[in-house]
Amino acid sequence: MANTTTIQAQILEKTTPTIKGTLKDENGTAIPAASLATLTLTLYSLSGAQPIINTRQEQNVLNANNVVVDSSGLLTWSMQEADTAIIATTEVGSEKHRAVFAWGYGSAKKGRHIIDMTITSLEKVS
Image (tube, rainbow, N blue to C red; front, side, top):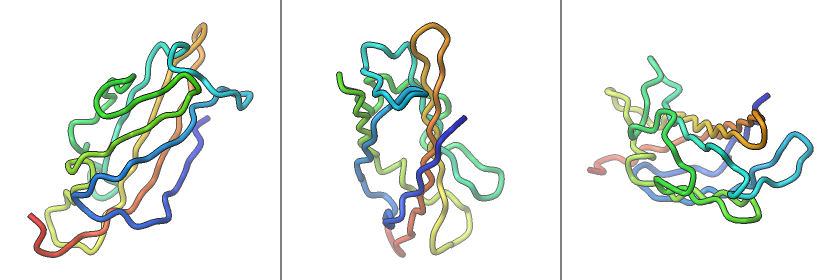
């Protein structure tokens, strides 16, 4: 079962915020990086056909591709401009994005966490 976090603060398009959270097992115990077999990120828009954003479709992010997990299970995602770009073809004031982190650990154990966020358009940003 996946847990969901909704980021309440507005994220401005083409900015580079940092998102942090702790990876936990089914008992609520932190999972250190050394215990992870896999960690992937899928990032997509919740509008229309739900297109993938910044080629992050089941992308390996286990201490790669702007994501770091430390020895205490703290995950730090340094978002890139392309992660917060508005991708709708029509002008909109905001766009909802979803990030899905999925991980494997131990003997065939799996976890997921969903992060929903709203990206706010800034007119005339290029």
